[in-house]
Image (tube, rainbow, N blue to C red; front, side, top):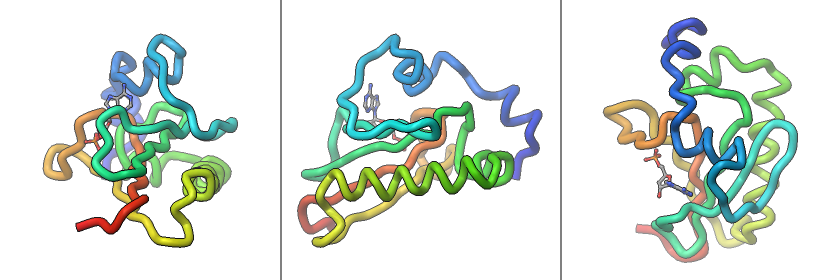
Length: 122
Ligand code: AMP
């Protein structure tokens, strides 16, 4: 687990999701509140593919879960739940994925959860 200073120092605010949060790049928004933003993945790997990101600058899951406040964590995962509802995948099922770090295959260094569904996944 990384400590707070390492994670915040290593956050690159030029990553694409930081630009989306600042409104410098557009996204196809699904849901937004004070804790999180949810939008469609631009290269969908399933019939329904959304991403949910916290509004604050956490690089990956371990930084988020160790450094975010209880309110932020609850707010973020409630936003994931709301996005699942809005995507319309709750009844038939879905997959939640969060790639973390190099071995996890994380491409964008701003913590995010993938929601994939809308079809039977392999
Ligand atoms: P990960 O490998 O978990 O970091 O996944 C990053 C995801 O972000 C990939 O599924 C990309 O297709 C997606 N992505 C990259 N750029 C954008 C963008 N501008 N808008 C929406 N999704 C994006």
